[in-house]
Image 1 (cartoon, one colour):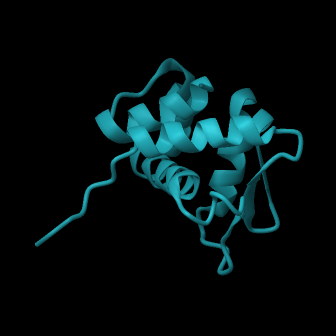
Image 2 (cartoon, rainbow, N blue to C red):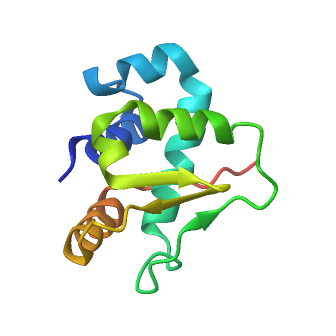
Length: 118
């Protein structure tokens, strides 16, 4: 599994910042890094992604989208996997289906968002 995906899942689940995410944590702060993690992981785990392989598009261009673009572009492992442009996030064309499916399975198995109740 790609270290960046493991690091993002670990950060979301445990609030532990791996060395590979330290710069992003320092630059973006905990809340924005967590928000970006939720967006990426939610897409990777979703039924939109598998089996259709749809990219995630942010139609309203949220104010944090430039930070997502920076985050993906700044880190080699993420930059090798994803392209972030035109208000969307998608796998690069050269990422094989097998790797995409392996990432999807890993995220589904390890990413456990919790529901908040009042």
